Image (cartoon, rainbow, N blue to C red; front, top):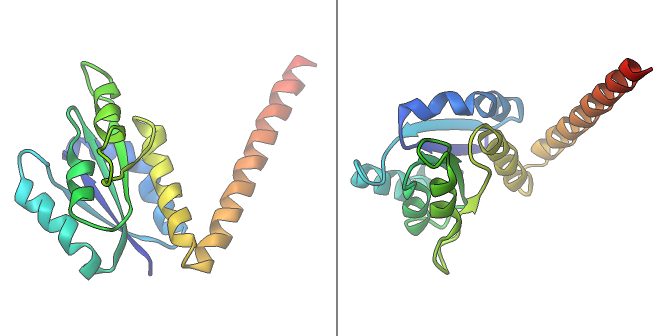
Length: 165
């Protein structure tokens, strides 16, 4: 089974990934969740990054707030794709996290998503799209997900138009 690693800077970030944690299994992807801080547990972060390929992990998602160096530190120590999810925490509501992840130096890419819940959910979809290049069964599930999303949008538009009539 395809496997992703979700590394969070704090256990308080876990609820933000509620939808993502439902999406991965629905798409046929195993997720391993770990808590590690680039600053407070740098050795653990290093071990997670370097040990991931040996555990069958193919994509790493890093969610962190504040200075948010977690995704960059992981990306510096692996050749696996790293997806960064900025956590929207005060005082800058995720803007600092977004910049820390998006402004990586040349040669150390982090695919950076939106701050907060949208980015967390999109990390599940983007990681599935990456894995779908190798696993055809995920392609079919992603296609179905897009169809469901389209139907839901059409339903919402119909409901709005019906309310106007």
